[in-house]
Length: 305
Image (cartoon, rainbow, N blue to C red; front, side, top):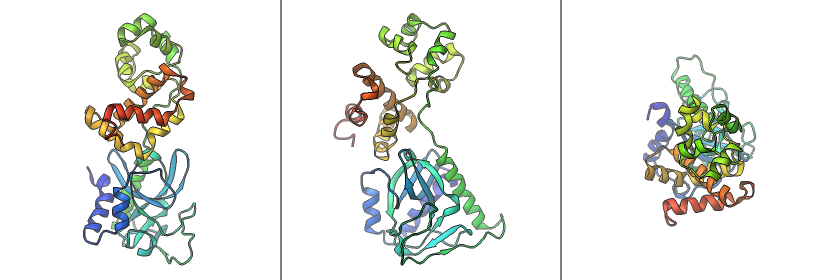
């Protein structure tokens, strides 16, 4: 992990190692992740980006978040410096309000703390009785605080751009027809049943990542580009697999299958979707229940939670 990726969480751990770790922090880090809520402080992780963020608001698919740092000697004019009593961290910290970003749910990894102060949409405290102050403007781009800010900004940008589920343009049938691939071709190349081949040609079923890889040479495209031509994926299924509570299961699946985390996430999505398509109309599927059953089968009932 490079400096930009590991700095935030490692700084938090280093600071905690020199102090008594508050019981509230221990409890939050050890607890099963829940859905994010405003006022919580989370560790956010995606590939090489790792950051500690305070959540100011939540919607169905994303959170608005502000990076948090314990190095209160670094700040700019938009940074708010808060006292120890403002969170369960029990030590002063800085909120870099100028680096606020909209982050998808699936970059959230673990809750590490809870704010004792309510934050408005702009990240400013709205709770009376909490004293705070703003930082000072950066005197030049060469100062250490400017470099510190740049590292935070890079991590927040990477987290904000995180993406895992193909959007699905719905152009797969036209793509297959243009390449001259009919039912027999798909049955032979993908080793699938006739009903599934017809489903692909009628935009009633998506290709899996493995199938997209097999067809990519025939289509003259990358496997990722082929996946993007699938029918649109069910929003509720994508959301279910984007919840922080699912990340533990996805990481276990990745270890078992020897794949990267995002490949394991896609594997769970397409396998769940394929099973639902065979048994019922996907729009009516109980996606949380189906995802639970998928992980029960592939991880074992006791280890899937």
